[in-house]
Each structure stands twice: as C-alpha cells, then as structure tokens.
Length: 443
Image (cartoon, rainbow, N blue to C red; front, side, top):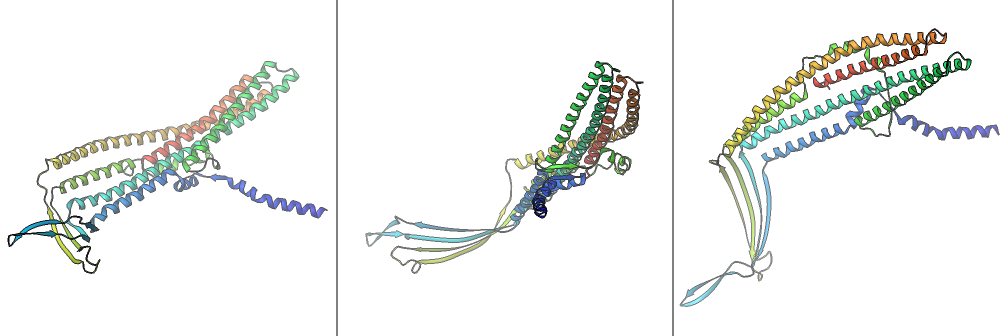
C-alpha cells in the first residue's frame, strides 16, 4: 500500500513538471543589455527600418537597370474584309484591280540601349546618397530606441526602488501602530493618537499600492518598446544604487565635444549632397543624348484560298539605328528648376547651422544636468543615511516614551522624502547621460 502511494505521488510529480517548467519560463529575466538585445530583433521600429533599407536597395537596382538594353516583343494579326480597289483603262475598257491580302501576320523583337545619357548617369550617383540616407535613418531609429529603452529600464528601477521605500515605510507604520495600540490598551496614550497611527498605516498602504501600479505600468512600457507581448511577465534586475557607483568613470569616458556622429546632422549633410547631385542632374538635362536601337520582324501575308503557313508570302525585316536628341529650347523650364535647387541649397545650409547650434545647446544642457545630478546624488545619499538613522532613533525614543508621535511621524516622512529624492537623483543622472549619448550618436 505504501509502495503504491509512492508510485502515484511520483507520477503526479512527473506530470506537474512540464507545467512547473512552463511557469518558470513565463517570467523573462531582463537586464539592460538583454533588453537592448531583444529590442534589436523584435522591436517594430527596427523591423520597419530594416524594411526601408531593403526597399532602397531594390530602388537602387531599379535605377541601375536603365543602363541595360530594353528588349520588347510584339505580334499582330489583321483581317481585311474589303480590299482596296483601283480602276485602270486598258484598250478603252475599265479594269478593276484589288490591292492587299485577306490575312496579315507579323511578329518582331526590338531592343534599345542608351549610349550617351548624362542625366541617367547623374541619377545613378544619387542612388548612393539614397542608400546612405536610408542607413543613417535606420541608425537614427536604433539610437532613438536605445535611448527610450534605457529610460524605460531606469524608470522600472526607479519605480521598484520607490516601492521598496514605501514598503519599508508601511512596515514601520504597521509596527508603530501595533506599539501605539498596545499602549492605548494599557492606557498610556490617548485614543486620538492610536487613531492617527491607524490612519498613517492606511496612507502607507495606499502609497504602496500606487507604487506597485507604477512598477507594473513601467514594465508594460518597456515590453512595448522591446516588441514583447503584453502577457509576457518580466523580472527586471538591478537597483539604481548599483548604477550610481559607476557614474564618475562612465561620465569621464564621454567625449562631450564630438557631435560629428549626431544622426540629425549626418542626415542633413546627406540631404545636402542629394541637392548637389540634383543640381548636376539638372545641368545634365542641357546635354545631348545618344541611343542605339535594333529591330527584327517576321511577316506573313496571304489570302483565304491559299494554304495556311505553306503558300503564304513570308519575309523577314531587320534594321538598326542611332538616335541623337539635342535639347534647344523648352521655355526656360530647366533654368527655373536649376534656380529652385540653388535656393533649396541655401535654405538647407541655414537650417543645418541652426540645427548645429541647437545640438550644441542640448549637449551643454545634458552635461549641466549630469553635473547637477551627481551633486544631488551625493547630497541625497548622505541625507538618506541620516534619515534612516533618525528614524531608528525616533522609534526607540517613542517606545520608551521620550519622543512624541508627531516626532515619529516627522522622521518617517523625512525618510520617505530622502529615499525618493535619492532614487530620483540617480534616475535623473542616468536619463541625462542617455540623452547625451543620443545627441553624440552613440549606439
């Protein structure tokens, strides 16, 4: 009987193993490098950018195909219902002559090839800039996504660390309320003080619920950016304090003056090159073009009284030629188009200078925010240590009756504010650093 029970228990455990494994696999453990790795393969932003690169590649090949011969085939059939007639006079007697045949078949092949085509050649050069712009646009999307994922990841750490602060506050409030409740039963404190402590517990519980909701919403934001299904459970590793220890060394590694890799500036430079090439294309429209062509046709004609494909009159025709086109006058449209592109070039230069000043300003602002955040981290770190120490002392003093509940409540609020301020200062530093890396074009 005992052996049978052990056998049933073993079978039950084996059956439960797949479900237990599945549950453990449902929770995805995520670090920042892991989040970035998943996003680079699953994010819709990256997928769209890759599709655009593939589209530009086909667009480039489409333009390149214009250099190859164009070959086309043709075929036709015509039926004559009433033939053309002519009347001539022979020996003073009219004679009617018919022209044409009942059936006409024709099939042919023709080919053309550009020999001198300045506009086409200039257009092909534009393909390179189109491809480069598509690649840079994809890189820009990648940099922007990295920035968003970093901030979302840091946001989760902020909400989790804030949750820990509120959780400790709730635990302290709950323990204090039990102490006050016991004192109230012993008659050493008033009912009012006991009610206040109970209200404090309820407020701490409400703060804890809000913090839990913030953690959940921040995780949803990260999953959206990573391209994960909303039903996937994730566990985010780390604490903000773990990243705080590396703040100085990481900041010193950043070359704050190197904005040459800024994606917006690079895209502007590529657009400027496109306009330069457009100007060359417009100039080439004033040059002559030369093309070659060759054709071959096979024709067959005959009347209904003749046997099909046997007695028909068959013949082949072929030929080749060159065609030269010289633009002379088109109402000045090419000149006006040329002037439009020149004005666009001037506009782009002004916009580029303004963008560079804007990027410089954003870089300086990010550096200033980083420096201020570092100072705040040090100050808030010391403040948090003092608040924790004060809270511990205040609790002991209240237990022995030296401090009032108001003193205890004030130290509790000071601890909460210090903890939240410390976490927020680390988050501000990390966010400012992520923004600076985005401006500098780091990916």
